[in-house]
Image 1 (tube, rainbow, N blue to C red):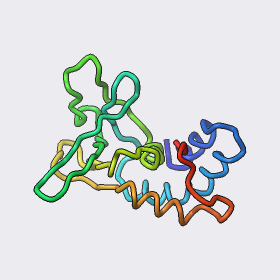
Image 2 (spheres, rainbow, N blue to C red):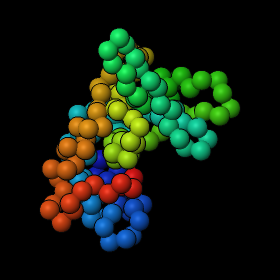
Image 3 (spheres, one colour):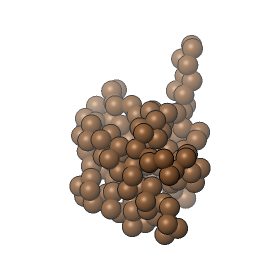
Length: 148
């Protein structure tokens, strides 16, 4: 599914409250701009059977952040042998859109190269929020808290 089709699916699946579809249309250029920097149109996210994404805390001496990993292939997702976790394919624009609503997550790390889990492209939540804020016309004073 190409990026335009992904955006249309976001719009089609949005609550028909008069606001959300229009908001998605306005932020679509920003979502597409970010998604175009990534190599894949979909990534695999490890999640629970209740569709809750697996969050990993990364720490070093001076920094702690909570991230979600997005894997390029099902094989790369190396979903733990657990009956409660699965690797689900999710369109890249949907992942970026969800990041806005994930208040406890600092970023998503997109692993771009199959078989290579040591490097990735990080998209920070604050960066996507800034990008979206620029896209929103003045009629939207702020990003709704229940955007995704």
